[in-house]
Image (cartoon, rainbow, N blue to C red; front, side, top):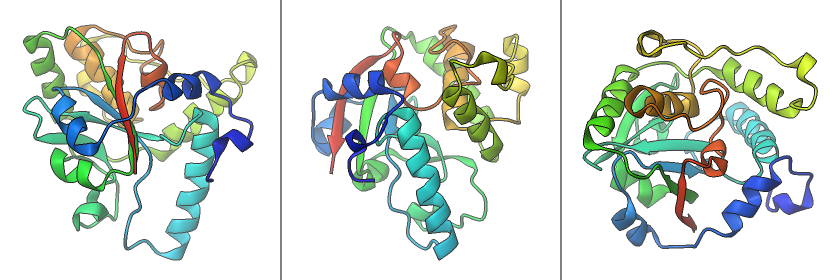
Length: 230
């Protein structure tokens, strides 16, 4: 899908916000990045996929773009030392096996080099202790499998948000103990959302279990720093 403006986009609010975010270069973006910043990005071109994976991936990506209101349909979060990002599904881009998507760490500079497009957003005024707790939470989720069914549930709820009687109930953890123990029903955006609750008591969305990447752009808690498009 080359031009989302030709289609009915459900998240026009996100599109309008993105249009007002200034462009920058990859080099300048690296200089701007601070610990625990969020990168909301488009899907990179992944080598080595078979025909079925390419077709299903393309269909899934297109549906997500329409619902979310932009080309950005994934998110990553920067480590405390700014050397890594935490993310799902980047193994093929780094020459690693990809039988199953798992939450992992990847070199930040290497990722920026292959990044096609995306937006840098930031939760301002985080204390060092808060960032440290957030990273501990992120580290506790390393190795967890990606939950495709969760994407379907969230997508369905966003599609029928004006028909609440059809909504699928997605319960959020009630306390920090439940947050740290939680292993199922997680995707990149829910892990990032809950990291801010665990480490800084900040809710970026109403329900941290019902969040997609572009919700970080529309959140009133985030600053929109810059975007790139290559």
